[in-house]
Image (cartoon, rainbow, N blue to C red):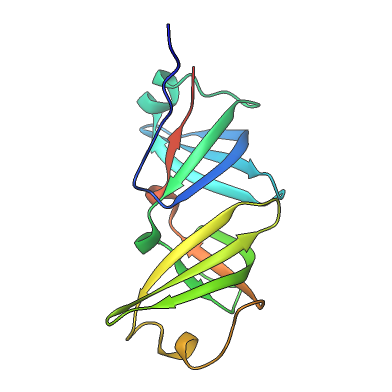
Length: 147
């Protein structure tokens, strides 16, 4: 039987290992330690946890669409349960949107898209090489695994 490789449109594909599964009645919060030792949270249904056979120690890929990620120079955020630190590696601009690449410790890259009205402050300075923070909600994370 041949192997299938997963191809997705999600720009953010972060590889890690499950370190904790917090069970709730209808959903679970999955803690994933990334290659650079930062932790990402994913909120998925309990049924998905069972169907995927998720257990502590399992290798997974966390998928996050770029528009779900917000960048900030500030680590604190009361609105988001995921905050990852990295260095801005590139900034691309188009008419209404800018794309930011954030290099995380361990080699993963995170992509964020911001509308110009939201990113006006980011556009006014050269931030490549600076430390910034990616903020996103755990319910915007998709967990993938090979069984």
